[in-house]
Image 1 (cartoon, rainbow, N blue to C red):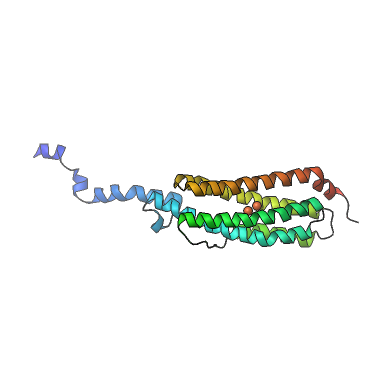
Image 2 (image 1 turned 30 degrees about the horizontal axis):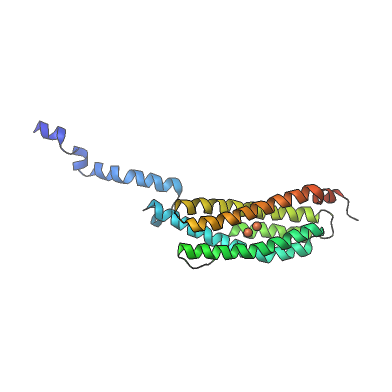
Length: 208
Ligand SMILES: [Fe+2]
Ligand SMILES: [Fe+2]
């Protein structure tokens, strides 16, 4: 019946092949574009929660590493103001870890870290500077630069976590993450001021 063809199901869909093509084509494209594992592509909200949780574990691991690295950097620094800046930020990092534990609690998960190769690499570079520039007037400038790489990494992470927490409606977590984000930014700013005021000029001097 000609009318039936016009208003009924598309013959290609009714035959099966068209239906398969239309339903599966777009999800496959989306999965390939974002390289998401199969288990993470079913619901957008679930995927964002997973990303948030993974990044939270990343930064928790990172802060614990930083807590251990800062005393070594403070010990190695020659400029008393730089030494004091590292010591002060070590104390602040303890508070940041406590805030992260609260964020885990708000999110309903246990506070655990996950190895973060990015922070491992940044800290390793700082340790190399400590070794290779020992006794050099340029040591402090190198340490300060390494510390700023850490701060910028943290700012990137906390900025993202804050945005995702906002999207997930975790308002108390947003406040905690923002508090740390501001603290990292202030530290970075203070390090820049110290570099410009004295540390970089000292690095220009020739080693004795
Ligand atoms: Fe931190
Ligand atoms: Fe920091």
